Image 1: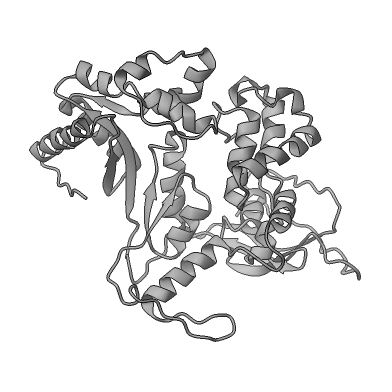
Image 2 (image 1 turned 45 degrees about the vertical axis):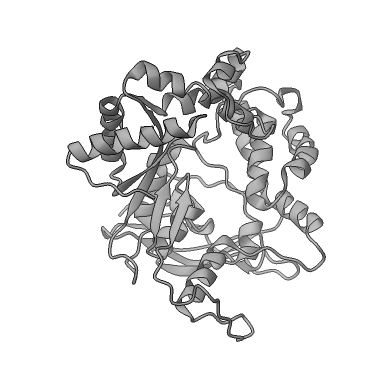
Length: 395
């Protein structure tokens, strides 16, 4: 067994609760490896605390347990007096991952505005408030620079700025009506499942029923782009998981691996079930398909610049679009991972995606300016997919 984190518990003092309290934390993985064995730890409010230890000492497991990424085998954790699993605690936590996992083609300001949306802050409000973290982390002079152009140290500052959950939580409280409180995502899913099953009771014990819906034979899916909360909620509830490769291609493997690591058998599934999405454009030949897909770049750019999605352009309008190097860098990952070409070429790429992700099924989307071209793309791909002995379902 690896060396363990071993820190004597700090004395319990009066006044405000500690920022973090860990009591008897133990984590033993399925293979029998114990990463953390009976850890007690207390970090007071306002303190800076560093974890030092050799590889395998349990540092990552401790952080994962606090942030609800790892499920402890035993023990109790609290954040400012709140159980670490509660929505109050989650709002007070900010996680800066070891890896630099920001969208490298967005500017710093765009990244902060985009991620504020995950916390219920509208785009206009987030844009007005973006200057505060930019100034706090001394990134204001780089606000409009793409993340990939930053030095390693500045990218780390950006990750920390994005992780400011206490400030984001304060903004949410200021923006919401007095007394209003948004619900934790995991609790929302629990409520949906209970309403469908007809077993819902409010915290006060009041029953509620939904019509139509209760007793409906529907499949509940969770859509996610990373191995974070969506993957964890889907896995822990034994639900089906859809990884959106067509939106975040760089994180699709992280998403499906995270979901599978969290999965627990349920009344819905006895093993993980994954769907992976992909954008495709298929035509009789590669040249025709590339022409039909010309509008994809300007359309994605309009979304990623936070200007708002434009009407999908015709090939002629797209070819007339004045591209800058920054524009191309902003959308290059989406262009590189869109599958465009003849039926055989696209089917080859989809088979590679399915093999890499271990997907049980693929969800195909096609967008072209002309609806007839879109329908024809689906027809050609379905014919080729069937010819290769694969099954398919249209919707």
